[in-house]
Length: 560
Image (tube, rainbow, N blue to C red):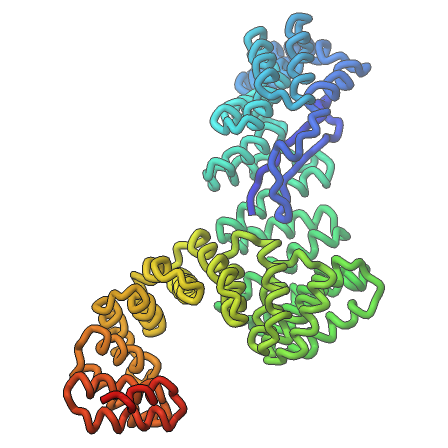
């Protein structure tokens, strides 16, 4: 979770409830640019300054009061400074503020920055000037500059939450989580009993988001409880609290949730369902909790209850996908596949659901279905190496050498994971060989260390007449997989091509004892024996090969 929204405020007189706010919640991570509605900085200031309560008169009264208060100089100075921050600007400064607001509205942030800097030069204590400058710099990605300007807001008006909140947002973006929490906490403190509950709740959500990111789920639970106390009927807050309570128990019990510790989370979830029986988020949480207790059937019944109602397709897709996960966890792959088919029909862009459907189809040897699912997954998530690799595996199984090679090479550009790279290079090398691209195959497989990879490297080297290289690779493969008769057959042929007749004879003699119906092995054995001047044994080997239907052996039997 991240905090990335800035506060946009309506400038108000003391005692008037706030405000226009774009607060960060745990469920969203939009940037300030995305949230830029900036009616706040300028136009709303005009509304405040044209009320029947002239700020200047309030400032005058504050100055008079200051002279009468003894022993409270620091407090009086702070009050004066805060009142001065909201004093009407001079005509010259107003021109710059209007220009800054206009440029900010037009998202011309560099120009807005210049106007606000000019306004600050005319009166450094003007609240709006620092506010607008902070927004301008933030939207240009200048977090250091924005941090400074919002720190000035907090200093100019410490009893208002705007400066503290926006400073907290920027500090969070800078990775200074503890400092961000301090400022957001101050925003909540000064806003308590002074701003609308919805505003304070937004601050609490931002605090909770950082606490969750920091791993302080207990602190986040307390923060959500504080927010819920302000609006007890808020279903979203109740579910946020329920979810964090459940996660707390999972964390405490290392993934296993004690049945006696889920009551509070369930109570909040069912309270929401009592008001909104088809609430998807609450249903998912209830299903998760039942599943954690080994009550998978009950979890599925909760999902089916809502699936039987009239709900939006997006919610139905989410719930059906959850059902598929529960079915998978219980080993019911057939029903899980059906659920995934429905989920992907409702939401074709769910790349994870498409991937899982492809995996199940691949296991069931339903290659066309697997290929379609993996293609859909790759379309929605083109940077996912697992999908590209799965696609390559299916294409390889279907014998589509060109596409399998292409998908496998794509994997090597998406990850540095050694396991992914090893499999991808094997598929790429194998299918380059099948396409008679022996040089490419050899290059791709050069660093392989698996038995299968060394086999294809040996075959590629043999095709390039690099018999020494072929022997080295095939010997390595045979060492790793001594019972693989295909490796032994090709190693025998490589020895024969390299004129290493004794090694060829030994390898092939052992092979035909294991696989006596291997006609080509008998034929090659005949050649090895002939080159060792063992003509009688050679003829016997050729005869056996011919009897097994290998036509070239007949020619050798007729040779003198």
